[in-house]
Image 1 (cartoon, rainbow, N blue to C red):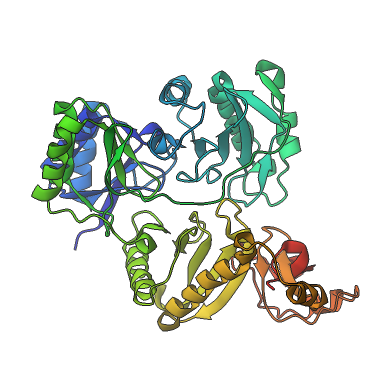
Image 2: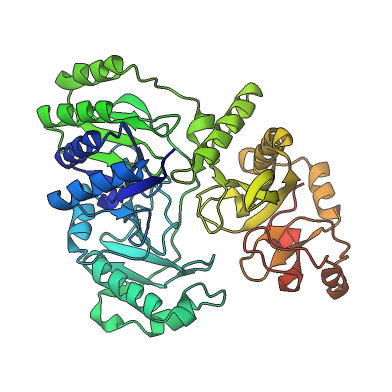
Length: 494
């Protein structure tokens, strides 16, 4: 088998012109490629043999499309625009505002930029390095979160920024971070205050924020199928193996052009959405699904997964775990389950399944174990949390994942109950306080056996960690851990 390669083409904010996509697909088809993917950052991914990709790259260059081969030096700007008007309501952020921001971007970002409405959880708000979240009560002003590259440090600026300054301030922030890598790039002690001291604040329209941004609880809408909305329809297409046949997509583009649908959208869930379908054209879209025999209405358990881009092994693991959850009729509403198999990859998740090689021969892994990590409060926008389960072989992984899902509902049951009986309240307050180890660098909590008593005598317990003990997220050693109370972190379940 010949070596393979992947071309990446960015569509800003996930907005795709049917005419442009049709041209790209036609070129890919002539190179002998039959299927394409969409990535986590709403981009198009085209994989093939080295010969096919070389041929495709030559033709794309002649047509003026910007692309990268086996690189991600210029990550796509992602946005919540695909959810606008179908999953987002009662907000000032409109299609025109999104497009004005994209038009004002006069540089191709080298850092990840997210542009999201605050009144949604369909698009991850804080997975970028420069994250803009629309202020709910202040039209045309935005909260700004900076996540320093290669770290879990997220800094929220206490100023709101005017819409027209998003492009320029994003560019200045990127320049400061990249030009001062020793302070802000892959630095566990990176300081948001130090970064913004370098920014020319007087060049921008800002105002003090009355309070931190309020991000909604994660709740993933059902995003596939043909649905009616406000006297029109929208279509969401999901593929179990993430592969979209070129022939299907070309037919989809043709229908868009013939029915005057001017755009389609790539989503962070590796799917596509077509909005604004007229009633009179509905038969064209049902016919498209029939001709290509596309299945709709996959289980929510399956749709709630996030998997690394272009990773067949992770996709197979997802399919295995989906079957395990479905066989046990497990509810996963309110959760996003991620799968991580590569170092330094980033996956949006409430519960993260992390694969680790434990036996290798000549650099090739032969056996894996799996850890299950949970975000703090199971909120996927909070990138730190605790280790729920360690060192599980694959045949026990499905059961461990199901237990972690059930623990989510158990830990949140108080949100759905009117009150606790008096005897339960008494039991809560009399419960013995529990302690856990927390990494000082990335704040990951490791729920491993601990003998701390809460009387201040914790240093010896930290020193008792094995020398080989490492943080499952950032791989810091035992000296980088401290003891914290589960109650203080909100992790002690009663």
